[in-house]
Image 1 (cartoon, rainbow, N blue to C red):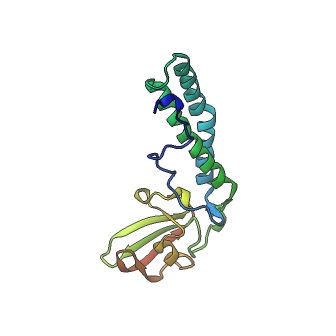
Image 2 (image 1 turned 90 degrees about the vertical axis):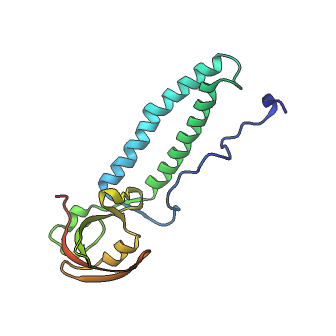
Image 3 (image 1 turned 120 degrees about the horizontal axis):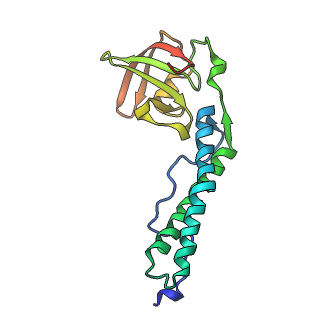
Length: 182
């Protein structure tokens, strides 16, 4: 069938969906994480999308769209941007900003806490408990719904915690708890 008679959909079958957690219940997030998501949304709206729209309009004016790489890539990129924008809008709508600085002086672990801990082999690790959208294990930011965060929540400095991780049972000692980045 000639490509001119096929319906162009808003979504290609081979394009991945935005990865992320299902949108259920509140979206707890730190003020920094909220600002980062909002900044990404603003950048996509104000800079990235208009640039791609301009490229697509230019490419469309060149005529034959079926073999026009700029047009095809631009339309695909617009769908990706629009999909990401829908995701960001939904996540920001249900966001509940939790400011960890309000917990200063508290030695109990809550959302936003920085925890210095030591495992049974003596390896020390510093983690911060953050929202789902802020998770970055390589930077020590773990989601509040992760197994280790669930085990740490409401524990105190000096406590010994045992929990079941995906790799098996783990034992950790909580060395310090703070609500400010060092």
